[in-house]
Each structure stands twice: as C-alpha cells, then as structure tokens.
Amino acid sequence: MDAFKSFRKHFPALEVHTYLNTAAWGLMHDGLLEWRQEDDLDYLMGGSEMKIPALKILDQTRNRISECFNCASARIALIPNFSLGLNLLLEGLSKDKKVLLLEGDYPSVNWPFETRGFQLQHIPVSNELLQDIREAVSTHQIQVLALSMVQWIGGEIISPEDLSQLKTEFPDLLIIADGTQYLGAFEMDFEKSGIDVLGASGYKWLLGGNGNGFMCFREGIEAFFDIPTTGFNSVEADLSRKDAIPFAKKLEPGHLDTHNFGSLYFSLGLLQDLGLSEIDRYNRELSRKIQAELQSLGMWEKGLPEKQHSTIFNIPDTNHRYSKLRKNDIVCSRRGEGIRISFHCYNSENDLDRLLEVIKTT
Image 1 (cartoon, rainbow, N blue to C red):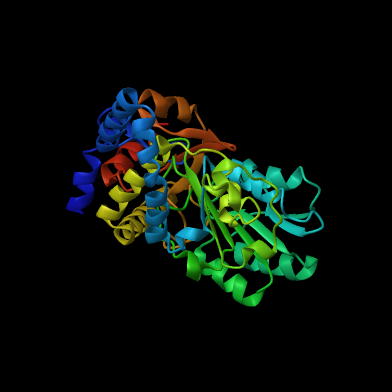
Image 2 (cartoon, rainbow, N blue to C red; image 1 turned 90 degrees about the vertical axis):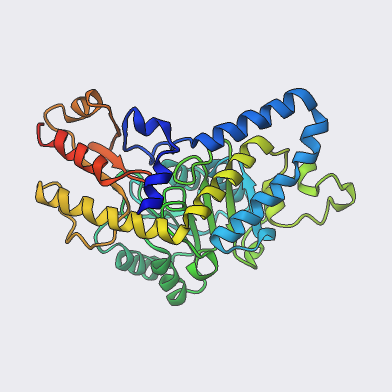
C-alpha cells in the first residue's frame, strides 16, 4: 500500500482535483513530463541527428509491450490509436463474415463493422453476458466476435478468462477485443486469453498520453485478413521487402512518432516498476469497496459487491448531481443517462470518501 501512496505523489493533478476520470484520460506523471521535455529539446537541437537514432525506441516499445502482456514482439503493431488500427484491419476482412457486437459498445468498436456491410448481430450487455454471447454464437453461427473488454459507459467486464473459455468452446471464432479500458488497470496474458486481435490506445490506464497504441496478433491470424495497406515504413526502408511484409507491419505504413511511443515506453516502465499484478490486486479491491458503498446508497443493482466489475461505474445524475460534483472539484464525465466515475491505482480510498461525501448531499 505504501508503494501506491508514493506513486500517487507523482501526479500533480491529484493535488488539485479529486480525479475520477481515467476512463476519459489518464493523468500525466511528473517523470514523463521531464522525459518529454528533454526529448523535445534534443529534437530542437539535433533534428535528424537525434530522430534517426531515436527510432530504436519503437522496437524497445514493442519489447516492453511484449513483456507486459505476453505477446511476441514480432506480432505487435504500433498504431496511433485503436480506432485507426481497427479500421485498417477491417479493410482486409471478408465482408461475408457473421459478426457479433454488443449493444451500446464503444463507437470505435461497433461503427467500423456497421459501416462495412458485415452480417451483424447485436446483443445487450447483461449480468449473464458470457452465456448470452455463447448462445448468440451458436444460434447465429457467428464467425467474428468484436467487443470492448470493459464497457465504456457502465464498466462491465468480460475477462480474458471468459474469452479463453469461449475460444475453447468455439475454436474457429475470431475474437477481436478492445483493451483500452482494461490494459493498465488489470493483468493480461495475451497468449492465454483466447483473443486473436487485442488492441488498445495508450492514453488512458496505460498513462502514455495521446498518439500511441498497439495491436497484438495471435500466431496464424494472417489467414483471416488480406490487408491492402502498405508503405515505406512497412519495409523499414528496405525496398526489396515490398512483397514480403510481415502481417503486423502492414498496420505501420507510415513513420511513427518516437516522442509519442517513447511516452508509452516510459509509462509502461512506471507500471512495471509498481507491479502489474499489484495494480490488478489494488484495483480489484478498490472496485469491491466502491460496489459496496454504492450498493449501500441504492446505486448498485448488479449483484453482490464481489461480483466482477472494473473500476468504472455509472451513477444516476439526479438533483443536478453532476454539476455539484464538478463544483466540488470532482472530475468525472457524463456518459449514457448517468455520471461515469473511474478510479485508477493512483486513486485512494480518500477519493472514494470525498465522492461519497458529495453524493450524500445531492
């Protein structure tokens, strides 16, 4: 616990606000600010003399992603964000596929499928989501499941263990998962997850700022996709490789920003130092406490406090509650019909107490 108290001290915004909005944007660490300033100064003074040698940080970032989430670095594509990566990927997926989506899932998950002519089925998010997915896959002969591991409005989780179980039952099912609201908050072993394509943007729980993300691909995934994108960066400046581009590199046709991906590399290192398993434990414990408190206020109707859930919650926006929260320097978001609050490992029980204090006056 002392490690998390020390970690918290490196986020100056927490001295200004009760920050419960990581689901919208993760905070910047003071060490990352220092690194970015030095990196920009080196670029200012060196130009290409700095930037060309700095390209090595791209491979270093892939290697760190590999260490954190257990995917071979050669099967990791660096992308500016999840949305661009998924759109590029779907250009190579046959449009005759039967696809299952979740109602109300993040638009950047659902819309790319909905605008491309796939055969679609939608199911609502429920307390029995895994069973509902299982029934839909079987009934509708679904070939592709695409979903967010954590729902962006209410915070419901479908875990790597759930997806691994689905893969065991339906080994031919192609599973595409958005881990943007999961990775960095909870542990992930990609190789054990059953997921075929795992993507994430780095600016939320991974604390990497904007302009960076990645996709992890299961071995053999190229059999499902015929991706037409290509470019100079796909061959890493070797023109003889035009017709022999590795699958992951097809999502990297242009130059990547070493500043942005260096930020992801730096922030992943911070999380590793704190301990990804410890972060997982801390956030799950915090989630249980939040559930219990919201249940006592009649704001949690999804089951007992120990029920699996993320650290994202949606509470009713009654009696001008959102305005009162903001006036009391509690940073949160309006999402769906309520107010979304989200806690990360830099939050403490004091932040929860402050939230409850204001809620009880509304």
